[in-house]
Every structure is written in C-alpha cells, then in structure tokens.
Image 1 (cartoon, rainbow, N blue to C red):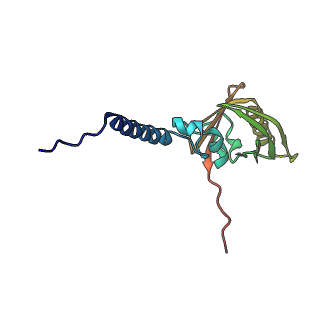
Image 2: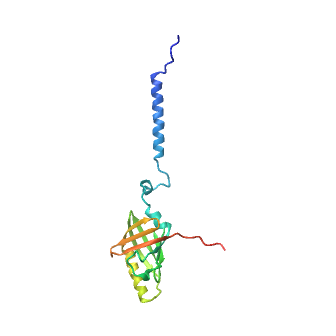
Image 3: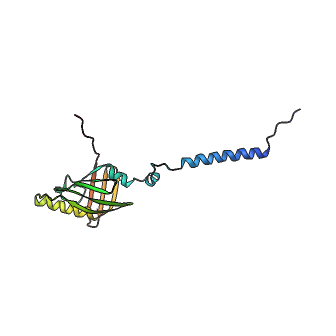
Length: 167
C-alpha cells in the first residue's frame, strides 16, 4: 500500500500567496488611471472644460433673461483660455479661466459697428452679464448656463461645429 503524496505546507502557502498577489495586482490595475482619464470622468461628473470647448454656444433668449433682440448671439470657448463670439451687433473676444465651476471672464473687447439703439442696448446688457458671470453650469452636453452678479442668467444651446461642405 502506497501512501498519498503530500505537498509540503510551505509550497501550499507559497502557491496561495502567489495567487493572492496576482489577484490583487489584477484588481489594482483595473482601478489605475490612463492618460485620458479625468477626475470628473472617474466620478461620472461632466468635465466642464471639455463641454465648454466642444461646441459653439448659441444664446437662447427665451431661457435667458435678456431681450429678444439678443437672439443669434454666440460664444465659443477654446482650450487655451480665450473666447469669441457674435453679439447682437458686434463680434467680441476675451479671456476666461475656470476653477471647478467658477468662471472668470475678462478683457472682453468688441468691434465698433453701430446698430439700432434697441440692439445696442441688448448687446450692452449681454456683455455686462457675460463679464459678471461667475458660475458655469453645463446642465448637459447641449445646454450651458452662466450666472453672475447682475442676477442675469445666460442660457446657451449647443451648436456642434460642422465641417465645410465639399462641392
């Protein structure tokens, strides 16, 4: 009668330790970040910079508390911290910085075209609201809200940039 072969206890412990080590390594590698990860993506929160710079934004005067003559106003944000757009009468540009959901807009300058007084008044109000904005709230990828110190709300709808048509 032959006795069963016994594995030394030390070998079983080494095998169990090795298996546990591999399992821990696999779990930790699944949780590691990549170059494309962002803190907001990790937590499932929208990345404000990506949302701002992904679209051209068109003012929605019905949702904003601005006169209807502000219709057609646009704004575009770049990843380099500049902004530009078309107001009710003039083109404009400036700079912005983000710190979480806090936005600072500064140095806004416009072209000097003259328009109907009602349109100029709407543009003046829009630019004041824009420069006083201090909170940015992308409610989703298709809407953007800027709120600030003048108790004005600027609500924009996304206009995805289109590529030029090839004729």
